[in-house]
Every structure is written in C-alpha cells, then in structure tokens.
Length: 138
Image (cartoon, rainbow, N blue to C red):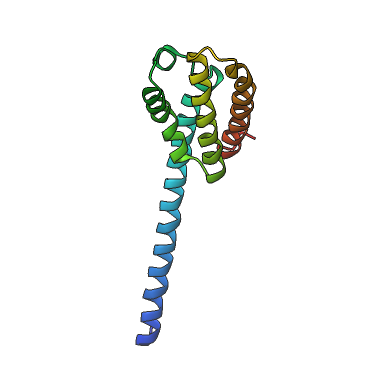
C-alpha cells in the first residue's frame, strides 16, 4: 500500500478538484460560446434580408405614424443589437436612426429620401461585413 502523508493526500485531492473545475469552466465556456454563435447566425440571417430591402416590407412601410415605425424597427433590429459586439451594435444603432429618417422622408415624399438612400445602403454593407466577421465567414 502507498504510504502517503496527509499533506500529500490533501495536495492530490486539491489538484484533482482544480483540474475538474478547470475542465468544467472550459466546457461551460465552450457551450455558451457555441450557443452565442448559433443565436448570432440565426438573428443576423433573419435581419439581413430585410436590410437588403431597406425594410420596405408592408409591415413597416404601410405604417404612417413615426412612433409605430420606430417601435417596429426596434422590434426587428434590437435582437441583433443585443447579440452583437460593441462595434457592430454601434453600426446597427446608427443604421436604425438613418433608416428611420429614410422611412420618414419616404412617407413625406421628400427629396431627402433620395439623399439618404445611398447612406442606408452603405451602412447595410458595413453591417453585413461586420456580421460575417463575427460569425467567422470572413
């Protein structure tokens, strides 16, 4: 039989516990990282199609009140903002503000919409590139 001192036994137990905790932390971190990646892919793929259309689908473009348009844009874009990194969140928030102005100008039949359109497109392209980087496509 092994002749181990109490100190050696304690060190073996503590070492085993530390190893177990380390493996557990790595496993949990890996699980949440995969879950976040899956959530990002689903959310980004859902929102990007609408971005290509400048959110001109009837559920938004047929609304005539600013407050309701803003609320609808929040409803669609907020999940992406929540899951994104800080730089992408900032781009999404800027895009949302520009998009709101664009929709307002369209409803008012203002020439300002023509000036905002290139900006909306440029912002959408920048967001798409960031989304691809976040999910590891680029």
